[in-house]
Image (tube, rainbow, N blue to C red; front, side, top):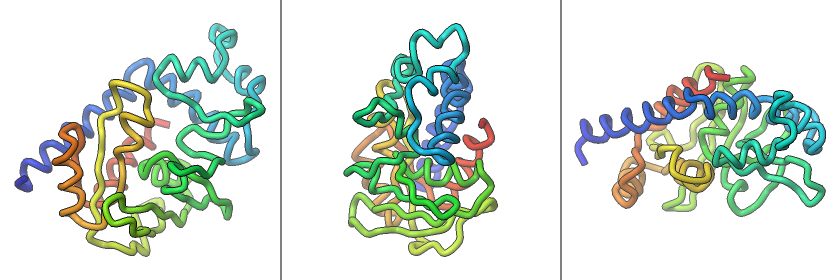
Length: 215
């Protein structure tokens, strides 16, 4: 695929992603999601009764978990019913263990590479992060800063971006947003999945900053 075609598709997918979060449901998720993430980072698991009370009065009877599920966003909960994941996660499982971030000296797990970049930008902190290339299984490390990436282990890395519509967010978006060790691996992934686009890793910070600015 030619560079101009790659760039065009990337901008199309990126614009569609921004559009999604600008819609009423998207703004609702951003508003409530910010409350959840703040609690997870500062206090740990979020009890359901505390989470439900965070909602606007008209929505409190639904509860936070159902509020998100109705918008194709399944929150992670533990056995006690506490919320433990919403982009950033307290749970290390086979999916979230791929994307790891450190915020204020604490380790967190994340649903996708945009999450490990977005939350440090929102908080204005430097965050050592790592992820795994789906093609080679190599761990890729870098530090997210308020202005870009430092200490990038794979300077030639590329990443994939997916539209966030058509189903549950982790399936249609998070699982398809990854960093690959190089351009060839990312292009191969985008060729195999016509919905997704790819770009150099520098674009990951720039485009994620647009999402972070919505919070």
